[in-house]
Amino acid sequence: QVQLQESGPGLAKPSETLSLTCTVSGGSVTRESDYWSWIRQPPGKGLEWIGYIYYSGATHYNPSLRGRVTISVDTSKNQFSLKLTSVSAADTAVYYCARQVATSSQANYYLDQWGQGTLVTVSS
Amino acid sequence: QSVLTQPPSVSGAPGQRVTISCTGSSSNIGAGYDVHWYQQLPGGAPKLLVYVDNNRPSGVPDRFSASRSGASASLAITGLQSEDEADYYCQSFDNSLKSYVFGPGTRVTVL
Image 1 (spheres, rainbow over the protein chains, first blue to last red):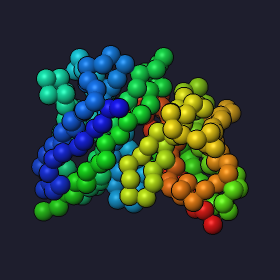
Image 2: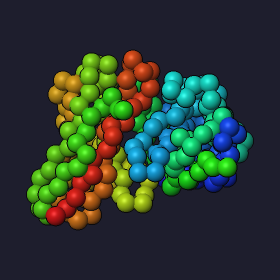
Image 3: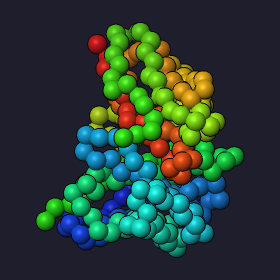
Image 4: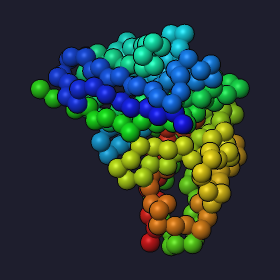
């Protein structure tokens, strides 16, 4: 069974860049049917999809975050990463990485394996 | 504000049946995009509960079932158990936003 584990600083300063890495074990990020996603959840609130990457490097981002978010993949390390620039208190959240499974249509992909999440607080 | 609407909370006694609605529009559920459901236990990460409308991953009991009609979908839990106390989220795709979207979540309480 694929397992995902987020890692990175738990604190980011306003206007700086938030950086997180997700390490995948029990499977490969190069499996053709899989996309690798980031989702976040502000404290006490709901889920927001941030974006995904395919092992080829192809990405799809939530337009509400476009311009601030970059997702990259390192197939040699079986990891993928998130960078979010110009952060503010509104970006304080638990960040989850997850596997997004391809189906017949890109619009119908679903998230079948999730990491445990990591809290990132934006504060000076 | 989410483009998918869910009731904030539902409750039921052990053994009862509860349903959670997920209402969208012509740009998401009504457009025919699949609906998926996730369960988030207190303090835990979301877990896939039902995918592609009404398929359950291995290990998910058949007490959980989903359906859809028009621009809405619903999740039913039959034989409600104390361990079902959790937040439940629906998810689909919105072609106006060009993004995967979640409902705001529904808290299920077992009385």
